[in-house]
Image (tube, rainbow, N blue to C red; front, side, top):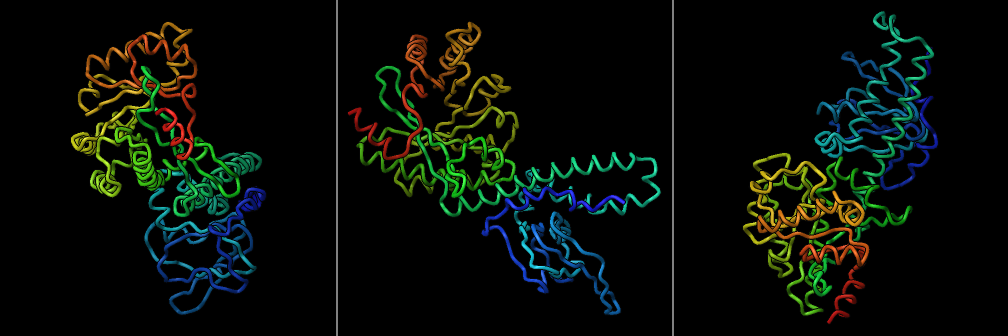
Length: 417
């Protein structure tokens, strides 16, 4: 007989889940779930064993099984909005990872790793039962099934790690573990700072500074990017007001990256205007950076929101322009005000004629359509001079300044006066 799935669970992965803020503990003999109660969460068993029993219509109680580390309990209630179908009691002291119903619902909408986790465990739970049926006689032999199970275990461990990161990121937003750095956008004519791009960072309490690539994709998959973006709006606009007050420069603007999911909120513009009003800023001080992928959705809601944002005075910039599937029709249909030349083109333009041609074409396109064009990723003086010779007005990159905290940015701006 093939051993239960929990025997294949990678114990080191389970033991790594030691953040008490996302775990719950139950003493031996305590009731974890009660039959008939409303279900608002599931639990992944990190350690310990539980017994599962069902009360029949004649009030007799029948134990239907046990589960140990590497298994899920209570998942059906959050999948189908029903009540608990069984009672679960801790046989040992148990350490459980909670997966809330709200987390699951949000993840379901965004096809996050959490959905993969729950789905895979539901299927694997019934693996032994299915193997006993006649329908599986023609399937792979015993060793093939073992190999498949081991592969599933590895995938599960990876999914579980993603779920843990998502839980920690939610706490990071709530506990102000996020921070912002700002990269200046400078005039190529006089090298003065005209605006700043707000860049989100995560200062993890255990792992230290987390690279954006290690959490932004997860935040987008789980829908947490929406909460994170509003955190950025609030803090970036507050910082911009402080910088304007201390420098006396009311022309400096801040640019914020916005995801497609942020546009699912029809009240987005109203919320933004309230934050701007709170910090006594004008709409022109806020630039929204979107990607070409957002335009590909061709959503009436997105188009309508972008139009209203533009009409209010905000600028709309397409980030990494030229790397996606853009078409001139999008630039005509959507209220775009700025194109940002992707850093890959800027980095190659001195050695690659095609890259230089693309940079020249984007600048020409911007001129013909009365759009601003910014260049990203400028790392050398030669690149800066080349862009200036092509009549590019604004650029950003390590050559001018790396992303920096607010206090350093303020010093840098003051030194220019």
